[in-house]
Image (cartoon, rainbow, N blue to C red):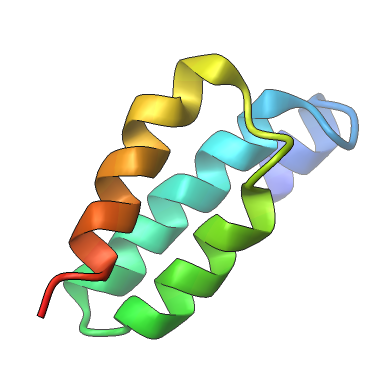
Length: 64
Protein backbone atom coordinates (compact mmCIF):
# COMPACT_ATOMS: atom_id res chain seq x y z
CA UNK A 1 0.00 0.00 0.00
CA UNK A 2 2.72 2.48 0.97
CA UNK A 3 4.68 1.73 -2.19
CA UNK A 4 1.66 2.40 -4.41
CA UNK A 5 0.81 5.58 -2.56
CA UNK A 6 4.34 6.86 -3.15
CA UNK A 7 4.50 5.74 -6.75
CA UNK A 8 1.07 6.69 -8.13
CA UNK A 9 -0.83 9.96 -7.69
CA UNK A 10 -4.08 10.05 -5.75
CA UNK A 11 -6.97 8.83 -7.89
CA UNK A 12 -4.81 6.54 -10.03
CA UNK A 13 -6.52 3.29 -10.96
CA UNK A 14 -3.79 1.26 -9.24
CA UNK A 15 -5.12 2.43 -5.87
CA UNK A 16 -8.58 1.13 -6.78
CA UNK A 17 -7.05 -2.14 -7.92
CA UNK A 18 -5.40 -2.54 -4.52
CA UNK A 19 -8.66 -1.72 -2.75
CA UNK A 20 -10.39 -4.48 -4.72
CA UNK A 21 -7.73 -7.02 -3.83
CA UNK A 22 -7.98 -5.97 -0.19
CA UNK A 23 -11.75 -6.48 -0.40
CA UNK A 24 -11.14 -9.95 -1.80
CA UNK A 25 -8.91 -10.72 1.19
CA UNK A 26 -11.60 -9.49 3.55
CA UNK A 27 -14.11 -11.84 1.96
CA UNK A 28 -11.84 -14.82 2.32
CA UNK A 29 -11.55 -14.08 6.03
CA UNK A 30 -15.32 -13.90 6.53
CA UNK A 31 -15.64 -10.11 6.45
CA UNK A 32 -18.00 -9.82 3.47
CA UNK A 33 -19.90 -6.81 4.81
CA UNK A 34 -16.71 -4.78 5.11
CA UNK A 35 -15.61 -5.93 1.65
CA UNK A 36 -18.96 -4.86 0.19
CA UNK A 37 -18.62 -1.39 1.73
CA UNK A 38 -15.15 -0.96 0.27
CA UNK A 39 -16.25 -2.06 -3.19
CA UNK A 40 -19.33 0.18 -3.07
CA UNK A 41 -17.10 3.16 -2.24
CA UNK A 42 -15.31 2.63 -5.56
CA UNK A 43 -18.47 2.59 -7.67
CA UNK A 44 -18.70 5.41 -10.19
CA UNK A 45 -14.97 6.02 -10.42
CA UNK A 46 -13.52 2.59 -11.06
CA UNK A 47 -11.45 2.00 -14.18
CA UNK A 48 -13.37 -0.03 -16.79
CA UNK A 49 -10.56 -2.59 -16.82
CA UNK A 50 -11.25 -3.36 -13.17
CA UNK A 51 -15.01 -3.78 -13.58
CA UNK A 52 -14.88 -7.57 -14.11
CA UNK A 53 -13.04 -7.98 -10.82
CA UNK A 54 -15.35 -5.55 -9.00
CA UNK A 55 -18.45 -7.27 -10.38
CA UNK A 56 -17.20 -10.71 -9.37
CA UNK A 57 -16.36 -9.54 -5.87
CA UNK A 58 -19.77 -7.90 -5.46
CA UNK A 59 -21.51 -11.10 -6.52
CA UNK A 60 -19.42 -13.15 -4.11
CA UNK A 61 -19.90 -10.75 -1.22
CA UNK A 62 -23.68 -10.94 -1.46
CA UNK A 63 -23.95 -14.73 -1.57
CA UNK A 64 -25.71 -16.38 1.32
